[in-house]
Image (tube, helix red, strand yellow):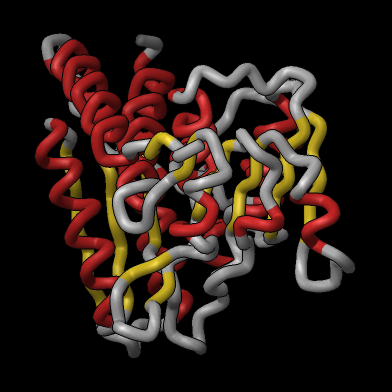
Length: 284
């Protein structure tokens, strides 16, 4: 068996085309979905991420506001700016790029964003809405992972899913989304003994720990779907994920590549969330 690749680039293109279509429909009514992206400091990776997000907005027809501040910006001034964006009717989503300078508390910043504009889905209120299965914004990376799994045609009802990683941004919300799809979910992490015992029983494995070769071929049930959220560098300096791609692709039925799998979906789901925020705000 050789696994089929789950092409995140192709799926992302399909979803972005739908975003563009729905955005055009809103614009015909005089409404343009708007995303404000705030960057504090000069972190090079953050600058790249922000540039890609702004470009994705423009390509899909969304309005984007990019605000860049020096690393010396005070926490009070940042919170004040977020408060202003919360009341701006032209802005439907607010994203503050992480990490922030050390003197700014990221929890305070996230909590300051109006839940109705929390298109990253990171706030405590957004997390509560997810846990309670209420309408709200889902964190973009887990949301994208669910779309990738859905694209394989797998019905998750009654399936066993293992999530490796327990972060607030990926692992925990990923587990909740799988539960909502009626999967039986196990969460594994650094303190889990005999990780392979759990993963060999799984119909779906989602790996999000940031460590190469966390999952190897002998740890995978034949025919399983493997979603690799990791982003690392191998010994040659090339991008790779958290799984042994070469080995696992001979065991799994579907697998996401790195790059070209989960990565493109994260920004795409940010666009989806921003569009949905505009539709909710206008009753579309």
